[in-house]
Image 1 (cartoon, helix red, strand yellow):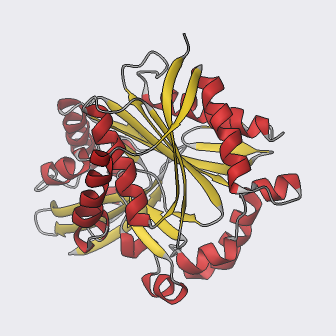
Image 2 (cartoon, rainbow over the protein chains, first blue to last red; image 1 turned 180 degrees about the vertical axis):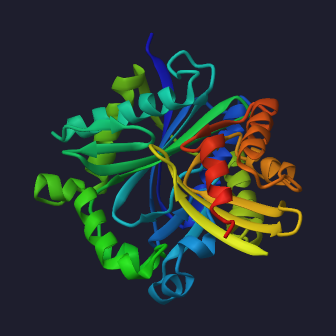
Length: 254
Length: 94
């Protein structure tokens, strides 16, 4: 019988709540309380997430965030700063020892990205995995991904860009060298794409999430059954939000 | 003395080092290793930072020290390595 995993559609949440929910799922799963889980979600207000090892004030223009009402949060995963606006975000939580998950970390990035690639296939978009952690279409990035492993559990989350606004992104992110900012913006515009750009029309969140569901089912040979967060996960998420992701100590720790 | 560096690791990620060092002794007083790389487990970066306190800022011995800490604690880096870290740290020295 096909293995059954849980599908969560948690809608749109704040940055701190989103990161808290991913961590709550990871903890609940590692305690054996919930099945392997795939989650699709969005961000409201739009937000910047930074990688675990990044310096918040080095990467993010906090004054601009405040001015534009953009949220920010430090992730528990490494990787770079991401502006989350028009996108579908996924997370997957599964055991490190699940036969579908390669022991090798880089190979497991490729495996999970394979699900996103199959999801994009559903939308008629031909993409490939570009190590370390990107998915590209016609040489341009459409998806960024980041993975952590804790308590024998893999958590990978990533973005699928519906649309992208590089100018707004760079008004919120700091660049190492202001003098070359214009060139940098031009370069990034050349290197980033979105579903809207490729299809020549807007494709909605729900349609892309449905395509991704199919992609994950195909890649992992599973059925995704729509479920909800357990009460314990909700409690954990509230706790992590309050004690970690919404705190200055966490977000400014580097 | 306080210093910073930004170093794009060849075929890897962007490494940002913030370094406080003793000019007389040529040793690390305090280091922060930042950037868009990956490390498993993540907490090992703080461990590495602490372990580098007092390390001599000389290429060969520094790289050796970093490598031995990586090995000892079974740290897995993606997008950075001992060689790149050493280079990034020494870029802080005028």
